[in-house]
Image (tube, rainbow, N blue to C red; front, side, top):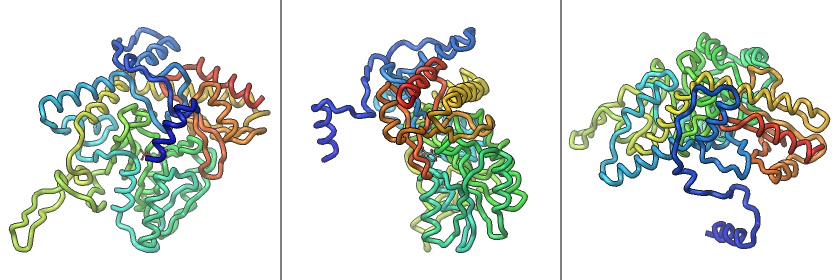
Length: 423
Ligand SMILES: Cc1ncc(COP(=O)(O)O)c(C=O)c1O
């Protein structure tokens, strides 16, 4: 209540509130034109940009935190909420579950619908069969969402965490992880892409190695769905937690957990309810629980929001309409463009992201040379950009994340702003 009052006091006093930008509802409802596949290059992507109601009053470069949805998602949400609330029927999400599993190339039986990446991480962290002394390899670059669940289990169950400082390249990181494995290692629980510098780990090679040593791979995939043309069976990990509200561009508060079919019964479900079970009977003596459904649906339970899932499916359809490989390639192209632009300013910034293109996809982190990162971020933001500070992992840096609604000319504007503030 106090913070709400403070918010309105600030508003009345004309104090700038970073997350507040002009919002015009008519932009949401504007007529959607289909994506014109005949356009090429920057023109094509400018057409994609028009699909988003995202404000033009500043340039959004913080998709690593939250991915604003295109109109088609907002329309799906609006019409599905209207439908469920006019009919009074809340419906079933079975059809959506099927489509969302197909989107990352897994079986419908292998997907659990969650509300965010952290929920999926908690399910896998607590569900894996671990005892005191078992070792779990993580990085020193974890998001709080992949640090706290494992720290909590270490605190309560005595598992031993082995954090490491990531190297710059895929082969170095693979070798490093191999060197950290001992006879006690039970899980490799690293991110697909770190939130700190956007470093991409070679999960396929790591999973192959881990499988040969009977080590579980439990991947924090917060930045993996919607960036890569993700194929989880091909990636080969055991577990993968992600969300739909970052790179998939779906509604906030939606996510999924992949549980490889072969390890389903090794991951204990601790929280269960409607749809987790094969039946139950309190009238028998003793009361009966007939067991879990033979799918990852056992990990999510109770009412799901059909409108939210319709929104997610609209977002995945949007990716498919553009083309998943095309998105993957575009993200890498923008990332390299930004990397090269920053590399030309080596007298004023240090790039902390990997110089190896395969170790990056959609985020670049840099550190100003002559100014504190918070002050620099504040001044650059005032030039009309939404970017993010990175206090994590003692980096004290600035992260830029770009998605398909960004253009090269926006990156040019950003580079000019960096030059103006730091030059
Ligand atoms: C690497 C990483 N893991 C986990 C999370 C947590 O995601 P969520 O908020 O969906 O739980 C984030 C969010 O930024 C992240 O960057």
